[in-house]
Length: 268
Image 1 (cartoon, one colour):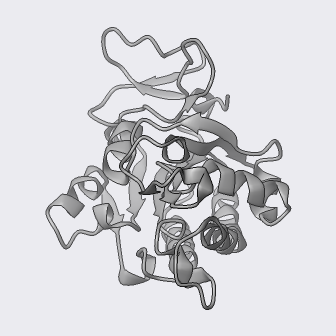
Image 2: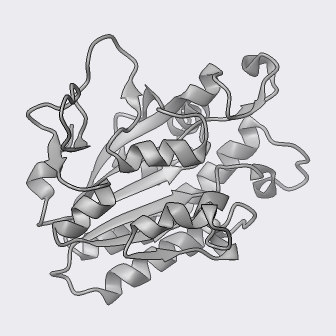
């Protein structure tokens, strides 16, 4: 477990959610050597975990309350970050316990600048529902080039994050959240000639994200490094044999509930 408590106040903290990414897709791409930048950052690979929800909105509500994907093993597992409330059974000696209405609120009270760079529709401020999650942050960004329909979403998001990190004083700590939409349907836009969603098109989207990842990592290193979590909020089904006839998400198929997770440290 990364020590978020040791980093509090001295290093930036980030959360990168790879929206709708299945564990099996992430694991296969990583072990096949197709994700060199993530491989360097996560040398032991992604851990398979169970997500608290089956689609973007409730999963992020849980994350922002300190409830991240849970290890697939018996017993009670201590969380890396948590909000203080009576009766919590999933905190331990290494858990950073904060006070606030959300993790974003808690980091803001700890002096962090909170930044959201959205991708999926639940971060699109053109609707009232799309304003709910971004409104938790001191600043929130969304653009058609950061959306699910954009083949340059990862590059655009990481460049924007890099720009905002450069613009802030080095003494100003940042809590950076990026909801990466590339791995969310329609991933077929990443494979020429593809007409449907599949594990192959999702892998292609993830490979493109990995290719752009150094933009973000270099910006974090320039500010002294960071600690963070990279995970999916939920998986998705493609109506292939491993999906047992299921398609999409918002249902309890194992390919929806089983997601990749990693706690990471970006060092100078």
